[in-house]
Image 1: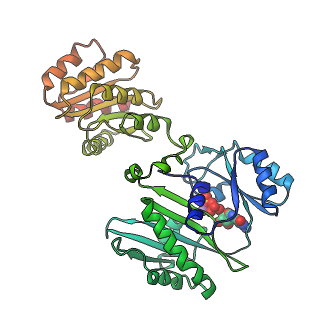
Image 2 (image 1 turned 180 degrees about the horizontal axis):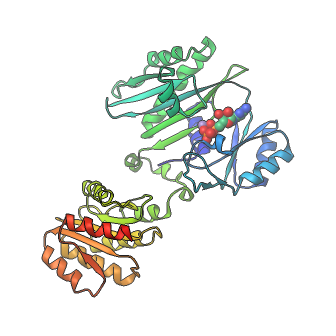
Length: 387
Ligand code: GDP
Ligand code: MN
């Protein structure tokens, strides 16, 4: 789960990690009153969307007076912000963070994430902050300093000093960096994060080390332990169909193609997406109804796929184990009768009660394309993709 910068900064503050002073504003009036409260110009206005690259995309503005706050806030709120992370359709800005402008001396990078290959938590810093870290990693990897922390031992002060010395920080900043790194590690572990990133982490001319940006991603599998974090979820930032699917415990992820597919089991989902690609088409989604799906879940899943306007065809690929083929067939028929199916639907199923399942499909009077096996299904999907 992702959260906004302003929310991440509130969590930082709880862990005594220094952040710029400021507040979120949902309207121009609110922005003006936050600016007034800050009492000093310049102030920075930052679009709050779940994507980075806002600076380059025009979502971060410096205002030097009340009238500039008014002018810039009205252009930011409601705008469609396009950055390299939003995709070409961009994201609508519904709120902005209004902050004190700080005298930046240098911009650094700080990042923390699980490293699956070594089973550790990787902590990375770089003096090349403020930029795209992927680009730094590709072009100047020597500028990234990394320590791998054994989660059983945790981040130790010597790790933090190693990072600070790698950044060639002056002693006054090393003193601030070490407790900050330790707090960030504590935050990371206590909240089951999958990423904590500060880009840029700045030093100011008056000798302070401050998180100017803040990004926290939480591991969805850990959220069950942190009910309070669920309140930070912003439905505006999530795909409405993904949100709908999560209500029914369906694993649904929207993608960019036009062949919707419904499967049971993540492994089969992967294999099915490969098959769709091999057939020369692109998957419109990943929908796993799970091993023990009921007819009702199949119906919900089918509806969700069909409500994506990009879907030009649907491929249902199910292995009937715990979910029997006849139950699946009932679910599909029920769903198809309730919603208007305007696109071709190819079904391949195998497993328990497959004959009965096929019979239900064939006798349903619906226009369903029943494939005899995977190869046949692939050809049928390819034919849809060509049209
Ligand atoms: P991102 O582009 O989405 O990662 O947004 P950031 O929060 O990183 O902001 C982008 C850039 O805006 C930073 O790298 C800074 O150069 C600039 N910026 C943000 N806040 C301030 C500030 O308080 N003072 C000044 N001078 N620049 C700022
Ligand atoms: Mn940033």
